[in-house]
Image: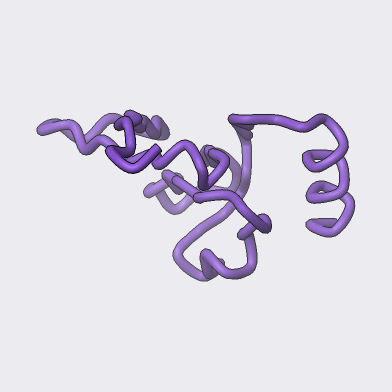
Amino acid sequence: MMEQFEALVQDIRHDIVGVTESWSSSAVLDSELALNCNDLFRKDRTVERAGGGVLLFVKSELHAIQYEFPVDFLEQVWCYFFRCQQC
């Protein structure tokens, strides 16, 4: 399934792709969800119930950094971008 998803993502020539209802959990490694040349940001559902979770794939060249809110929001993932001084 991930192979098909990665092929679709590469075909659309994206910068950012968001996924809802990822169904990922702490039992799923980042390496199992990783896409080539992308940074992965994720928020899994924390309750003992199937479903939920969000993923955010951002082109690595955009230099995204995950933003951590002082309050834990359920199933939201945020990032910000900084301008590379060498670019």
